[in-house]
Image (cartoon, rainbow, N blue to C red; front, side):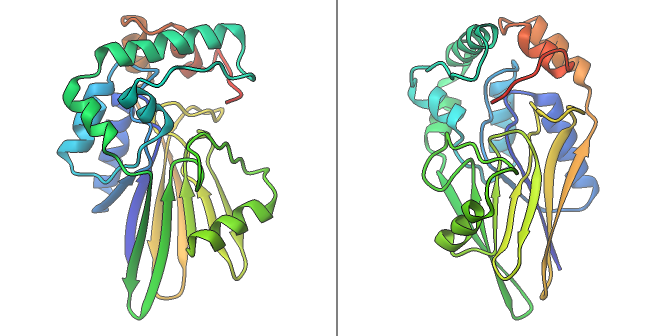
Amino acid sequence: MIQIAIFSDVHGNFPALEAVLADIVKRGIQQKFCLGDLVDFAPWGNEVVEKIRSLNIPCLMGNHDERIAFDIPVVPLPKHSEEETEARFIAIDHSKKNITERNRQFLSELPFHLKLNFKVGKKHWDIQLLHAGLVSNDTYLYESEGDEVFIRMLEESHSDIVVMGHTHLSFKKYFKTKGWAVNCGSVGRSKEKNRLASYLILTLDEKQISPEIIQIDYPIEETVCGIEESGIPDYYAAFLKNEKTSVL
């Protein structure tokens, strides 16, 4: 049996990341992978990047990482309110101004996808890791998508399971004879009602893959205070306190 932990969308929330990493260590899981979006919306983008680097955790390039690494212009999203649109521009600009050159370089060199193959006994399991979609990091795939969308991803990636993040909403979907499509949720900016830090544990044996979504508490008030004391709009502190909702 092999266990691996997969997490995504830290978004500068260092207290949440530390809580998730501590939980993974407590469970004795050695293999860890990150699906990207290390920066934006909380003030510890540099600390998050440096933690991932120091632990040598393989990490993908999320859409926010790409924007900060290459100074890509921010484009308003049609489903955002005026308030969130304004807050988003300020928060991303905060990251661009505060990221260190070394950490910006790290983000610029992250891979887009990662394909894993684990051998358990005589069985090989193919695991496709991605941030959002197979083609674009701005693809929003929710649990409500038609089954054919996820089945096509499994077929195109030649994998037994596809694991993604990006939407900040966790789910698990199983397709008989095809495999799993799983969203591991978000460590630092969950859009689920409980706002808990979310990550995924995959347990592999010779017969099956068993995905388990883990949701844990973290010192959210520490993050709220950090946001309120930084140049990041209080919109994101209110969001973590469940006083704001977001479509995307």
